[in-house]
Image (cartoon, rainbow, N blue to C red; front, side, top):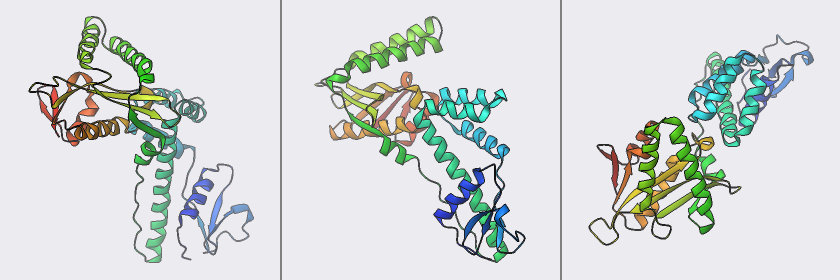
Length: 299
């Protein structure tokens, strides 16, 4: 017996699939979900079993999420939990609670994947009914950035926070690149930051809606009066580790370029020192060209 798969019904099916203590059937006459123990004739054509969803399914879903997660810090923690073999589900949730924005990603990821499972199940039924398949439209994560984060100009009250974030980043550089290499890279960045000027540089702050510092970008002029007066160098570009993988770096870059364009800047240079490997594709996608190890863009 045919039934329509509404968004409300999908949510009810997801809830029932996750309930590992009961077995549910879908009564197509409703459609409504019923516990199998409440149905007198479960073999009737009006009832349909839900997609299979057990602890193995949940574990595989967590593995998929960790594989896709771009935040290396959190991904490593979650990967260690998955390989521990003890208290996996509980510990997985506990780690996510430490990183609320990643936790939101997880809920969105899980919901989307489970909806795909349900749609595949429903399309199998539509095959049986002789109907065409329904398509699936993936949800965008951009709403998370727009709703939960703010991008604004630098204020004097931000000075100490920025200094602390830079100091922390320098420590990370020294930890990741031991010995002289770390010292040289940290010094190069400090030298690069000498171009920065609170009153003349374009500095954008990224923060959560609860006003927690997330990251910042600073673009500084080479020479305000000479031939380079319409060119800037991105002297700082930083997203805190716990907020990486949410698309905030891309959005911070776009906001910075937008503000620079409004200030009649014509060229933006982005040195290799500030660019992790995964961010190269973002720069190219936003229109940057590469000269050696330096990126620039014409605005």
